[in-house]
Image (cartoon, rainbow, N blue to C red; front, side, top):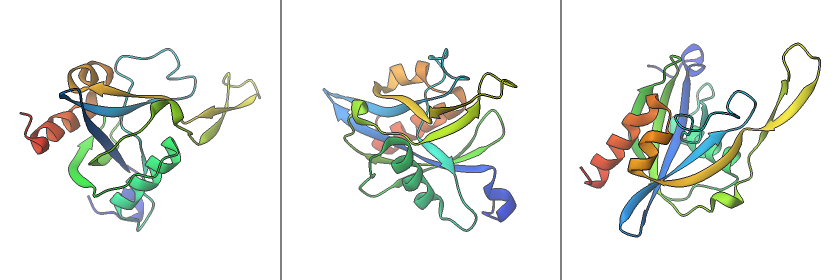
Length: 161
């Protein structure tokens, strides 16, 4: 898919951070904030990601979105994990890097939403309300189904498969 002005609206970019902890590989996932996701846990966790702007390099967008959603500058060389297509049709260009992030210290940007719908009340919600480290096996149950191929690709990259 070309990163044209039209195409970029359907392209997000994100980072699947990982670490080696007590002999296992763990991945860093986030739980989206807001009322739609509030009652969902299993199958809701995902990588920090967001839209690629027109003429923006996906790796730059992934770093920007990570910084905005986590409040932490991702340092290190990004390794590509390729593109996946989410259930809603959006494409996600994913990258990975080794990192140490304190999930209790995340500072997410916020968004405004009329809630409840048609109430006239606009409320502010964090884009990310929780974050955590998950062993890959646990992450498979927690993660959005459409992002699961990223775990397979990470394991292949790390030689864990």
